[in-house]
Image (cartoon, rainbow, N blue to C red):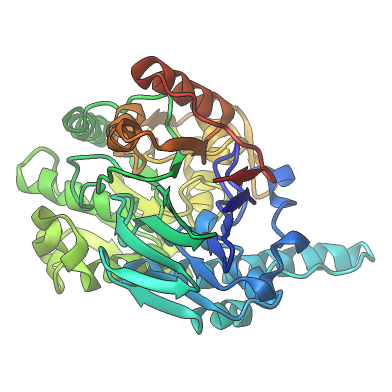
Length: 463
């Protein structure tokens, strides 16, 4: 059995594994590279993938860095099913459609510049029509049930605890009279936090491909994170400032809405206006409401039916561009939640342009910021910054609240991998920046005497 890494190797984005058995070729994830211009140049389907000869695709979850190259794959000739939990497929549908719209808008804007300069126009990476061809191939699977997806190859999806519908993949394949068992972690979540259920543990596999986004880091205690969030909001209210929260539409938005409702109910913060300025986050929240059966039991009532408005009466949904623009003139203090989560696109960019120069503003970073993203540069102290061609001097208070991460930290990863290591599984570390991967490899050596592999993009691993 061969596994070729076509992404997320010594890198966080672009997750894509090609598994080749004696009888089948299966792709686990087919994600977009995000971040630097160098990485974005990798957003194509390598000829060696031979899309028309792939028998099945399995999605661990619906984030763009795990599903974003699917339209390219289908355009290149893939004609099989795309498997995932129903929650994963619903979220992937939302995210791919949004990505197609953003790319079309970006291409239109760039082509207006090119037309003035007499240059050839560019095309978006994929269109909504391309994404819709992907949706036709979606095939939902339930958690914890075996499914035959190709000749002599079956999979089982188990809870990964990352976002709604996220899963780790157990793959069993027959080859040359023997049987091999692989585990792909997907993106793993933390234990004992609201919204998502805890990751499932597995105790045997021939090889494990484990994500290491935070392989060398320990998150703050979750209770301390909630207290810090409350303190920062109270401080910003005292300064009569706007609180800008760049949020990822899927996962982080829902997490924050739940905690804000609890803080207000307990009297920990005043019931100030909360604006959800993200049509995509609003749609994602509805998907959560449609799948409460796979959420943590303690949040099911909050997301059921139309309960969010009952629990959070100060919440105002901004749907149109005019409603978003009107937030420039709303009275502070207030909370404005808008995408994109790394501050590089979406409505949050406009709010940053209007408010970063104000000392009363609080920019609350609550998610991962990739290298070279505007969010990362702001956290690193860049001043001034260019936003939409305008130079902005930063006077706002910028704080990162790290404990909300949807990713497992070092201790979570060690907890997840321990049963597999005890049964002598081979461990391959992926989906992480080089220093995070190296630190996790060191931890595995120290704790278990295990020598884990760290492959690069294009490496072929024989199992």
